[in-house]
Image (cartoon, rainbow, N blue to C red; front, side):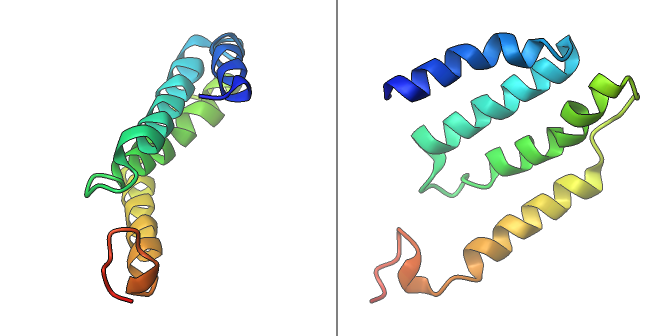
Amino acid sequence: MGIGASVALVADIPLSLAVGWRAGAAHLIAVGSAWMYNLLLKYTWASWTPYVLSFGLVPVIVADPIATPVTTPAAETVATAALFVENVMGRPLRTLPWSSVT
């Protein structure tokens, strides 16, 4: 991990919690899922899970500081999964990292 990434990770904790504990916790979960994607899940069958988790938390992160009670809408979570599948499946096979097609 580089110096910039380390500084960003350390600064992210107090900055996330500064907007409120619920939104901050949701943001930290989203950041954690992004790190899991980059470090472990990028080239696996489960690579879609951080996207679904993080984008499903967006309404909580955005609306909670406004003091509006929000639950994560299932429609947004399903739409996020569908967009990720379209993004991956829409590419030609030769551009996928696990493809042996040339």
